[in-house]
Image 1 (cartoon, rainbow, N blue to C red):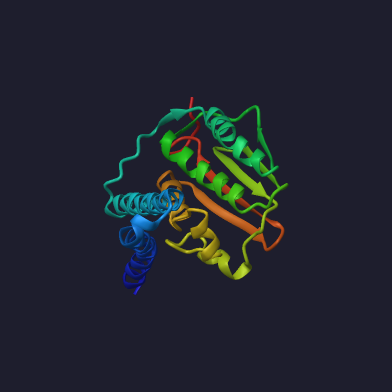
Image 2 (image 1 turned 90 degrees about the horizontal axis):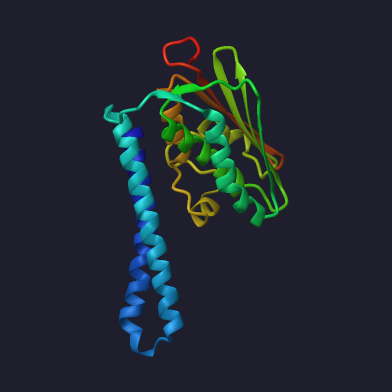
Length: 234
């Protein structure tokens, strides 16, 4: 049943941009001689954007397929989590500023090095922070924080955005699940980001949880072991 539902979801996600591409391409083909250049360029822009969207979906599906088959190798090595969080904060702070959002970073001074796949962990945090920016109204607030908790590290991303209805929370990490389907698609989401994030976190021996109230905001917490196999990294 899950497999049938997954195939149906994939088909639906791909059908929408493919239909859009065909419609715009056919319009250009049939009316090119009479269409203003600006209109042609506008239609071509839509085609390029929808093609990029298909590419994102396929890329995410391939990554999930690798996880499912056990072929996705993780490169575990000690890395500086504070530096990673600073890079992510710096990468998205301008986007937040465009929407008059306040984005702050708060890390404890005793935050240790952690052992893991740096690029994968950064992918997880970047996805969560990007979602916070995407679903927080103009003038909102986003806080990225991290602290040590015994032999683990808690990374939290909090916002005062639109929040998630209580009935949607149990499904939030399912593949292709969207709370607001129309809005998610219009903003470029594939519906696979949180599913991929959970797969990465679980393969690091960690957990990812979400707390949210509709209209009041969301807090996503990623808990990771400092060192694979227990103990602290040097």
